Image 1 (cartoon, helix red, strand yellow):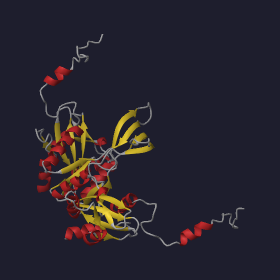
Image 2 (image 1 turned 180 degrees about the vertical axis):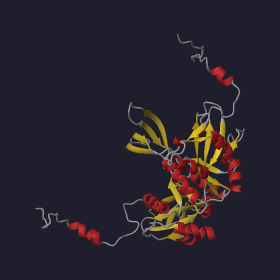
Image 3 (image 1 turned 90 degrees about the horizontal axis):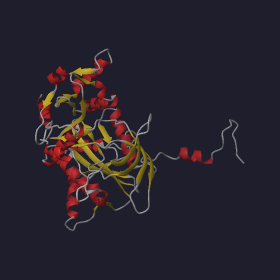
Image 4 (image 1 turned 180 degrees about the horizontal axis):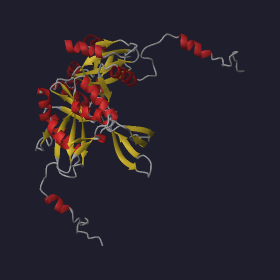
Length: 198
Length: 198
């Protein structure tokens, strides 16, 4: 039997508990990519920074051109990105980063990066760009900006018998923790300011 | 009748003439996009600048995930780009531009730009980025770097009864002409240096 209130609305037993639950920033269901995109949108609209996610690279094999309608891609494949996902400009500085999630509680696995992405970051750093990884530990909802120059150290170590991951205490020590905020959701520009000043 | 050589290959009457034709810089058949990509590759390999073309934005509708092989995109459409095609970093400067061809001999039509591309350039200029259009007059093989700030002037004029194109003499006067070169093919960084110094 459906219970109805006098105003005609259905009784929804789960709605109230949803509303009364405190807001958890960086809630499950929203991917890190979505969170970063929302943050970039805030920065863009408030003229703080211009940072965009690059489109996913696609290798197109077959396209149909039907008369009087838009071209339809009928066969295509996902390509490997040759750069990082995000770049843009902030106060004249070139910003370049990738956002990576890990379910690990103890370390950030380096296999999250492709070789060519790390190589791209090296090239950007050489040109004076500000490059970093935005690392999220999803189990604890913790986010860190981890400078590319620090990443390179661990990346190179693994090829000389070093660890295949960066221990979390090191991420905490060398990185800049970003706490979830209302607007922007991930205020990573705060860390960029600290990197510029350092 | 199809003529076949003893090795089974078809006779291709046009192949030889293609090979013996002397190399013409900025030759027909190579799109401006290819020329810019080749130039960027040169700048990248020689550690002069890190500039990449962004992937074409695609709206994916249907993807098949066959067992034991790569995901296949079965239905997708070309999306409008919300930014320019090229960006990157040069000596710490953020570089952002679009490459546009015109067959006109007398003017550069402003319809080559989408509204959102011009808006993106405005946002980048506000953040201290170096933004421009790389304009090619294909009939005469002439290339110009035309600063975004100059472009804005003509863009805004057209909405107030102004021309829908920039007369070529003005492109010549305000722009920086780039002559085809061996390596890189389009040495546009020379113009960027002039913009930085100005």
